[in-house]
Length: 272
DNA sequence: ATGGCTCTGTTCCAGAGA
Image (cartoon, rainbow, N blue to C red; front, side, top):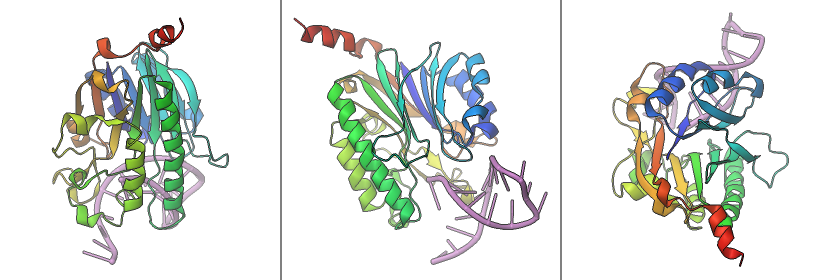
């Protein structure tokens, strides 16, 4: 089972790029971020024609998240994070696909920091940490995937010293991410490639992609019950080098279907 | 330290992204 996350940076401008990548990579599940499209302008018909069931949470101009599932309809669990009824930004959506719970997220950027946007980022992370705890407590196999806007370590950025004051790399941001990880999540790409330089984002400026001046901010976190199923992981870097690309590249994992726990079985065991 | 690039809205620029 192949699960991917891709910050598409505007699904209107990049639908052809998305469809081409879907056809080539054929992920079973794809989490999309930064749709930048209102709910009614999401190109559901084109995505369904490509063979994918889809749920999405749009918003005018900004943000927006979706979950695509090849050959099946994702069963929505919910959208938005609890804890702030005044939050109207579309950044979180959750669904069940097959035996796996998929949480798709677009964590706030938070720049400039300090400031209200950074405060919003940190409070959003606290709400995500609460949801993470709940998800792990269910014992279900969960993938929490998306654009985290978090550079976890020095290894994940081409020039750490230039990012120390950035909201993606500030100590408060990394500390909150570490507390999330401490719940028991596995950082898939880092688990598969310890010590290696892997980037998922290259900005549009100064030929960042050509110079490989990137950062790793798109993550697929696995719950403890799912971590043993991790078989492979990667970044479709070449997508970033195409015409009119997103500034992110698709990032993916491959799970061994035989090692994905069946929640129903777990429950059956609990009942004598 | 700044600016560099790309997109959206209803545009002849401003704001956001990271």
